[in-house]
Structure formats: C-alpha cells, structure tokens
Image (tube, rainbow, N blue to C red; front, side, top):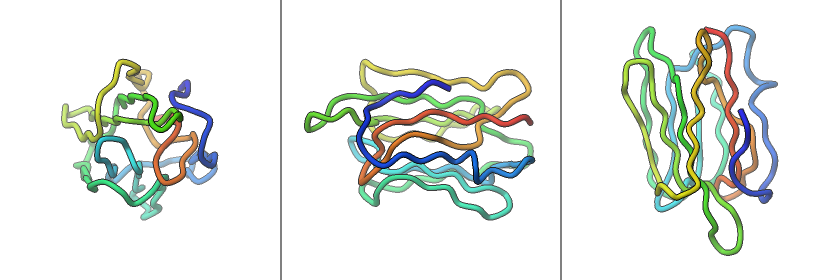
Length: 138
C-alpha cells in the first residue's frame, strides 16, 4: 500500500521476514492517545513488532480460517512530528482490534480479492511514525 505518516523514526520492512506462504496467528498493538507499537505474529511463531513500549497492549487472536482484510490508520502532528495516532485491524469475520485516536487524516487499506494483510513497512522509534501495509496471497 501507500504510506501514511511522517519521516521520523527508523525505517523497517517486514517483507524480508515473511515466508512464501504465511499466515497470522494474532495481531496486536500498544496505544494510548497515539499508537506506540504495532505487531503481528505468524503461525510459525515469528513475531514482527515495531515501536515502543508505551500505551496499553491489545491482542486479537485469529481463529482458524480468519485473516485480516483491512487496516485503518490515522496520522496527525505531535510535538512537530507526524505520528500514527490510530490503527484498526478488521478480519474477514468482521472482528476488529483498534487503539489510539482517530484523526482527520485517516485511510483504510483493504486487501485485494484473494490477498490478505501480512505485515507492515514504515518508520518507528518510541512510537510509530509512518505505516504502509504488506499483502500476501491467501
């Protein structure tokens, strides 16, 4: 997908850590008023996590046959830097996990037919600064 957010933090990309055939066992995030960390865990046990340890952690464990079909992300300014303020994962079964605060700069990335969300790329430090979505075939 495209990226949303600002240029601060350290760049990361989950693509190189995703196996050819990957599935998620859970998705999680840490958030207060902004998103501090985003994470996914693959069924093979690999954990891909980006950001800091602030906020409250929330996790959504995916059921058999369940996968993430869309991710909604909001960005805004905080201390003269653009940060990620909100993330919401939505599954094919209509379940959601969200944290942070929605802003006027919000986008929803929806996986194309036959694809699913598998990870992120972007920038992060103590908080998440910029995010884009990585899709893989189902």
